[in-house]
Image 1 (tube, helix red, strand yellow):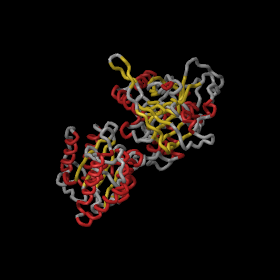
Image 2: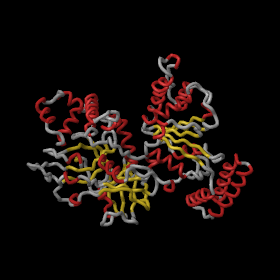
Image 3: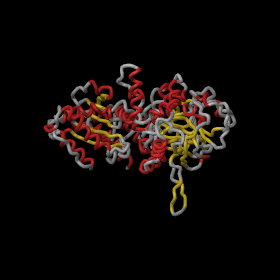
Image 4: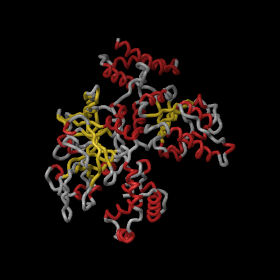
Length: 595
């Protein structure tokens, strides 16, 4: 209810109860702090109303509200409601463009089945009843299915005529099932009388694994527990493939029952957005284009289990709140799986021909995990001698697309001799933004630690915040084992950034050769990765993948043995160049095979 009451606040200004109360000593002080927060941010009345409607309070609050009447003038309420009904044009424009890339049509055995949305690199969310034929009677998923998702099936206007865009189809992965929860049996009967109280624990969703990780190019809708369904009369946008047609969108209002029913919007939400068969599973976004739910179907009018029954002469649809789906995921599979490297391996450095990436599968998986989850924000790379440790920064740069990620490379050689203000100037200049005005430490009336935390770090975050635009920001610190950071306050500032990274959910840091032990406070959000020398199996896997990708008919087993033998010899005679020579031999192998 604490989150639900914040439905009119921008999503990045909503906080869960546990976050507000994290440093309180007992329940009473936690509630007091939460109530004070609600008063400060003007959602106290909404919170009270939700508490009363829930029936969980003793009745004292309801009586006080009746006795006191409205505590906020009607004109003020009207002003707030109107202000929150508007949408920023840029937000709307971006939301439409992104959501078009995320939304897809589910096709089963060649037949249009419904709509859904990308929620991960290769994870797709739709309504369970859309794909119910892919499940056995005992609710276990079938082992082999013929199904796919079609993206970019929309119309565009050119010279006065509508043309169909070139669509892209992606098959379900062989291991296609990730998680699901079926709908209530009565919801499968079009004319059934529906009681919202029965919907609890029937969330009608399924998460499908796709054959390719196309989300790394397209992006995906984030599952955010703060993305509550907007209040009644507020608008949502529904993306859909109605009746299997090209993609459509519609915008309309959240509605409800008269009299109100506690199961709406707790278990389902009702809306007036247009939809047809085939729209099921379509993503519902609020005015900020946060994913707040998925469309489920129509609501049979006059079937509310309430006294007296009220018939309303409008057509309403129903959906599943995304918060309930998120809760079910946490209770069953804990967290969504990250893509395996074999699902979308990166073979070569971008724009560098066939310069190979070998023996880096675990590292690639760690990078994907950092993309998909906030638990790990700092990765510290060490490695065996001549194992290509620093090469991994190039691999990370290749994996992370420029469209989805803002990357800042700070080689230790380049920053070893400059002070912290010069470092901030370098970052601003590289990113093409004005250099901030930084008060020098000798003019700052506090300790160096407070100066770095409260002044310099704040300026850095201001720079990044103005540019990241929904992207993750990555700071690559390379060759830290080869160069000492001698400039004033630079080493301390690196530690400050790492310590405060947990307060910036979109920030990631990769340390190459950081020889010191990471501070205890940083350990919960950091991982260590030790690179090793390339093995014969690594070379064979790389060649196998490359041959399949390029359609080359060669013996990977035989060629990998030859390359590995030469690599071992070079490791003995000239170890500092052995890995580079192996890469050159592998590049030549592919180029010669292609002809």
